[in-house]
Amino acid sequence: MTDGPRAARLNELPKVVQLVNEVFLDGLGVPPVLGEFFPQLFNERNIENIRVIVEDGKPISHVGIWEGDLLIYGSWFKVGMIGCVCTHRNYRGRGYASALMKDAFDKMKKDGVDIVFVTGFKNLYRRVGCVEAGRVHVYRIPSGNLHSEEKNSEITPYTPDKMKDLVEIYQREPVRYRRTLEEFKILVERDLRCPDILLKTFIASEADRPLAYVSIGLVPDEKVVRVLEYAGSPRAVLHLVENVPRTLKIDLVELTVPFQDLELLNLFEKQGLERRPSEAHVIMAVINPESFLEKAGLYLEERIGEQSPLKVISTETGKLRLKIRKGEMELDSEASALLLFGAPDNLRNQNQPRIELNEALGLGKALPLPTPTCGLNYV
Image (tube, rainbow, N blue to C red):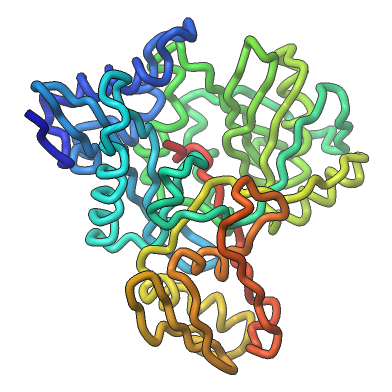
């Protein structure tokens, strides 16, 4: 008997984690650590967001949701992230994942989520209206290719007594997630609770003043360090990216930089690193455009000098009609994320909708909005 889509029950949580580990890690020789790696997802307080289909008493398909708050240059938005989407190999091809994705989007819309990020680029996600939007530049830098001028800062590994230093650095970021002290601690200290998780955080300080940090994931077989999140002084970030891989004897560092982080991008160019064409960090959908645009009003007003330059006139099935400062515009609902966050230079899906902003509409340089990345909140 098939039961769902629905929220998992508390007694099913261990079986959901077992399913996720089996689907994603089986045969890789990796310990079953995904429950510990995604503590913000797989916990009892988040049980309503662990969406499942159950058959014969066991979860056989899963979509995970994390909901939180995202700051973009003074405006707070409610964000949802989708991750760990999977179906047991014996039950694939029955439309379970599609049913769960629709269920997840319906729940997030009901919860008042403004924007959804999905970590992956499958057609499954595109069918629920996600597009490649936002612009990031991905660098893969061989160890020894950076030479920072931040010679006076000291680099130290994170220890629990430095938690408030991370908070101080992170709170200065113009694009960031709302995290309680306990939530931040849970995200940063995953490796302390589970030694099989290869995640480390390093802090750059000068005269006991915290300047920047990087949180990295290690990929030993590839000899790669991936920077999952960075924050703080761009010069100190460059210093960390230069020295941490060398300290760990790693050959390569991979770093994702949003297009609005101009100071860090310029520092890399001065180091002789070519700025690569932009790509999408995730695929996304704006699922409550009226709410999103109301919250974005302050940012847009500061850019344009006019209150609420973008308003929703009407929403119909698959269509969105907007009043834009000097005119009106109708677009496919899924294209609203492209209007607001822009399309990257490189697209994986060449068939997705395209948006051409007419300068006569009077939006000037207000769009695209800054691109958020998932950072340590990644699911």
